[in-house]
Length: 175
Image 1 (cartoon, rainbow, N blue to C red):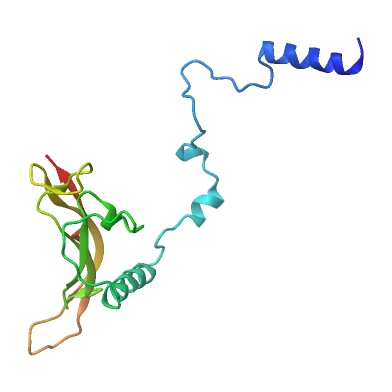
Image 2 (tube, helix red, strand yellow; image 1 turned 120 degrees about the horizontal axis):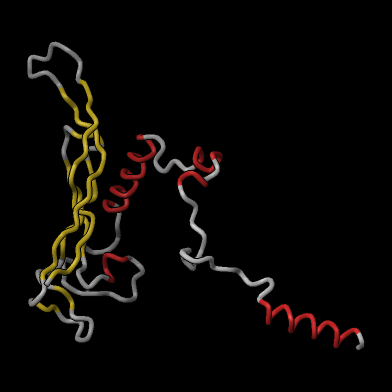
């Protein structure tokens, strides 16, 4: 047997025997490996800190509010889907717009809040509003700080307390 034929023969045997193929022991799921909590390296755990500081979180919310205030997009309150836009709130079958929720005793004082643009939902086949379904807001809790000031005449400094506040973050369809 010459060299190319030997290589083909070895390759055929290894494929037949399953060498080099990943094995799936009984009871194990197929699919990508997902680390359990005990298997995540500690250096990754220490680096994974989304919104590690409240200041960063509040700054990001402030940027969202500034974008809403400076938006050149007309304040359309129409129940319509725009598939040309990449914004999920305008592509949804239950589209929503944003308004600014203002509360002077809260830090941050302004939060972007979703408002449903349809009473019903947009039918994906006709692209018209269908009132057999209902658009409802989706709520989430966001961390904020509350100013706690003594009543006038003020005799002491204001304090702050961290609380979770419920706010609309989008809309969805229900039957």
